[in-house]
Length: 319
Image (tube, rainbow, N blue to C red; front, side, top):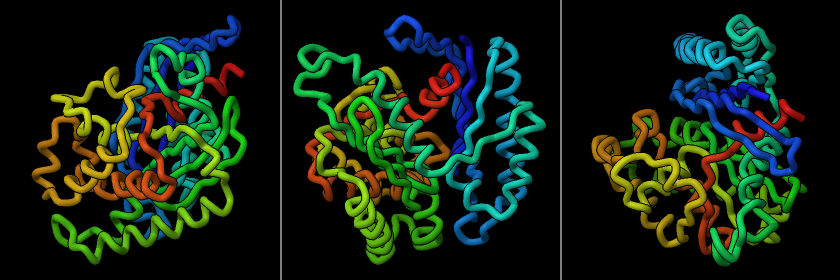
């Protein structure tokens, strides 16, 4: 079945058009089109509690282009999932109405637990097919801790073949940047970074209390902050999803890349070959979230996945 999955997060709106076949037992998903636009839908939501008019218009503009692609490729079913920013917004109905007009379907403003389940499914199906003895020696071994670092929230899911425990916490690269780093200098001063770390550690206290993260043998990292750190650690001359997908980045590399990013100016970050322009001002907070997770739970490495909630949404349509 050719399906279209749209994921509208706090920082970006993404599209996957794919052919999905779950009937053969191989759980095959073949990409037809995969797109991402930075729209910063969550701009100011942490402060105002509302979606800004210009943020809504940026998002709807990207979605109209996606609708054209969906029609061109002949997807027979579409599912639109919205995450952290729209959960928090007082005027979320404006978003709902706009999405319905564009796609002809109701957007599903999923709970944090639902978001986590979709992310886990998308991230781990490919890992389950890898042979530890060939493609990835010494792993990936279940149980997995799947961490999806978004713009407004971060999802933590522990499981083996299926998600067994999950939690969404309100730390994300956009939210933390707006809360602590905006207008604090470039690069940010130590006091501002300490405030970011304090918020992250408070969230991780809750994660550790509610999710059995220390049972996990493999950390799987998702989303743009993680893939950007991976691209920098690999020294890629341009963003190469094939090289990044299922790469293994050591804890030492995560710490070093995070240190470098936090010491850079905006202009220096913009010159990083793998950096998307829309991530330049928020990547420091995103990298710091990953860095503190690796430190807190003593993982020796992170397995990076380019497959995430979009793939989980696609699978959910077929099911």
